[in-house]
Amino acid sequence: MGRTDHESGPIDPAPCPEDLHLRTRKLALPSFVGAAALVLAVAAILVNGRAASPVQAAGTLAPLPAGWPTTLQLGMSDAPGGAAALKATTNFGFRYQYLAGGVNTGNGWASWNQNGAFVSYYIQDSIANNIIPVFSYYQLRQSAPGNSLPEAKGILANLQNASTMAAYWADLTLFFQKAGAFPKNSVVLHLEPDLWGYIQQAAANDNAASVPAQVAGSGNPLLANLPNTMAGFAQAVLRLRNTYAPNVKLGYHLSYWGTGVDPLYAKPDNATIVALATRSATFYASLHAPFDISFAEFSDRDSGFYQFVYGNPNAWWAPADFARNLLYLKTFSSLSQTRIVLWQIPLGNTLMRAENNTWGHYQDNRPEWLLGDPARLNLANYADAGVVALLFGGGAAGTTCACDATGDGITNPQPIDGNTALSLSADDDGGYFRSKATAYYAAGPLTLPSSSPALVTPTSTPTTIPTNTPTTIPTNTPTPRPTNTPAPTQTPTPRPTSTPVPTATPAPSGNPATASWTTFARVSAASILPGHSEAVWASVRSSVTTRVLVDVEVYDSNWNKVFQRYYDNVSLTAGVTKTFQQSWAIPSYARKGTYTIMIGVFSPGWGSVYSWNSNAGTFTVK
Image (tube, rainbow, N blue to C red):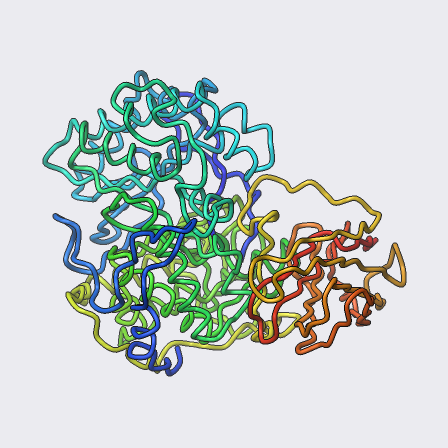
């Protein structure tokens, strides 16, 4: 669930979030450790005919990075000069700040203060208040010439541009030089959120070495003998850190969607979660560059924000979603041998009257899940899964802030869904987060485990979804994200053409190995009003006789999934088109614009992906 784009400012700025990103519930957790460990400890994974370095066998957690706090710490997004005010709330362990703007645009972080002093000032302010500074280095996407292209294409174009990468390595070197000037103090560099997800999707067999990048080819003499691949890219980052700033802890970014499956929407079974997390760890291992820590995310926006701004009611987290998240994190942490920072956690809640699902006051249940459980069992589960810090902050204008971002002071509008608690402060979340953070530290922060104990069954956190949610939580259906439409992209995605174009997609290696596929869709009305029903006919043809699962999905103009139906164990005859009809009742609150129909073909039971057509057909909601 990724980061958000940021603009640079002139002098001493805190880059303001631009809202372009679209993405994205306590229960008895399944006993997965024993069975999963057997699955995960299998033989080395073959990449391009060679045995790649096998991922670490599942088992104990990784050791903490040297100098890392031994207790579970909280942190917040925090602007320059804000450390003292942050510390006045409670004993926060971390504060974080984006470094953005691009390496060759004249607007990058290095220009915010003369000669990169922005980083120096932020570190000094953090040290003075005994807080560890975290920098989310988000430069590649915003650099030229790729910043004029859709996100995935732009990133790949920049990586292969020698001039851009020469500027990139120089910019990163400047950061390390500034951070290295504080050798006795820990500084955390969270490197390029979302980059690694795009690279995994572009890679062959989850092998980063298959994706080109200008490393030695950039002309940087310190990197002269490194391969011009994304594995070389990661190795270059470590070399620069080791050379200029050994005090910096390097953070890798785990993007769940890099596998092509988003677990929140797909809701796969435990075996699939383990397999997906193993793929994530395999990709990480292919870098041959050991980072100190990994960053992961829930999403950067409140569930109520998705629901009422984007018209997507399916972003709420239910207990089973948290269970899958824990399993994914525990598997990846164990296999990669990195502990995990959960980053950019939204700040809404469902208890305070201030949270009425209006601008700046959107509801969410994740802060309650993490900090509202008096027994701390949910926090203990995350610590046992490898999580060592929780960093809170919205990723877009209008999301809930633990501050008075809206400038409306203390607010207590009429309650909705039983949120009857009066505001504790002018903070837009009604003061909930700061009060819970203060209580957490007053009780003493949790000691982080040194091994991998069993998960505890939580019992005392509110689990209800607000009753004004207009539709039910999505069904437990795996949904792959098409690799050509990455889930977390914040760059506006070009709207597909209005004419459905049948596409033939070669089947991947496997069963059926030689098949090709044609999939397309037609609709009952090219243009339709909310409150009416749209019939969708999805057609599939295979070059071989086989049995498959056919998945039909509809996405709105902001790429939120609004409808899905699938047909398992369907028999197809070679060369014969089979058509599947379904009807979608368009809700009254549906977003206007172009809707896109996607069709996926899998082996039965959501096995191998045979075909994915991300533009099988379109229609317009007026």
